[in-house]
Length: 406
Image (cartoon, rainbow, N blue to C red; front, side, top):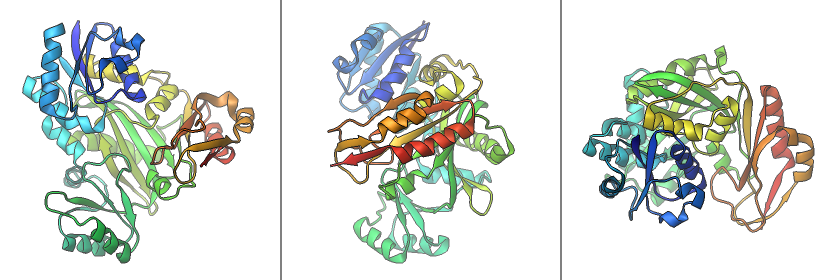
């Protein structure tokens, strides 16, 4: 029996699916360390968790270590320590190092978490990525903008997704941004070349430094474009076949980038661009399973529950390489602007035309607040053996379904 601790700041639905997957593994005794009290775990799942320890800050490595020590007294020596959130990877690595547990090293965790360091690693390894600069003073910002040209993208070095990410199209916008958010030595800002082209993801599994599985996704359009245009509903397509020449460059560069960052065993989520003028550029990589229903999409494409496969990989070092026999996609249902959902239009026609392809859906409910960002208030997941069928259905879904906010 292997004792493992899953660190969960808050019991959100997606995170609980990973916890449930871990709790279902034969030969694993699972404990949970969280900020939320145990009473917020669904009763059926709580019955399968061997121990729980509550802490005040689940991103504080000292408190995580105290939590591990607490559950150790309940179930015995802990052999694995895992967590699925981006912000957890560095503190988890620090606690593993302190306790002598296997897993992502502190140095590698920093390379994945700090996007400026990450891109420097890529440059040193000869891997394609956007030009960038870590800006600590106004002169550095202006100098980079003149070198790279507009548009440019600014983001926090340890950001995730498109949170706090902005596109600046002119010197006037840059000046306004710097007046509102002046860079500081202690709080630098990452400036990047704006990559023009199609955005994709490359999700992969490595064991002992060897890539054993990968998946490719196509974005329509990029998340930043969606954030900047509130009328756009985002779509993601996972083609059935990802071993053709159109993905050859990322199949070569993706594993090399992961190796350069220092991952040995784990799952990664990489975002990359196919440039308008040819070639690719890697945007960033996270040493965790993907969010935004990507884990669900991959599971349906491969007929393998990745909410269970990921903790099995991290706790038992085991992974069954699946066969990809379907294309899948998600249409994210998003109203224009912000506010609460007033109504959802077009559902009956969408059900009539696309219902046979739907394998999972979350329809926005009246009165529900729409979160900020590109994911919107709900989603529809579609699946079919033929990629073109899913691609057409995604376009039709966002054409038919309209979320009205009020």
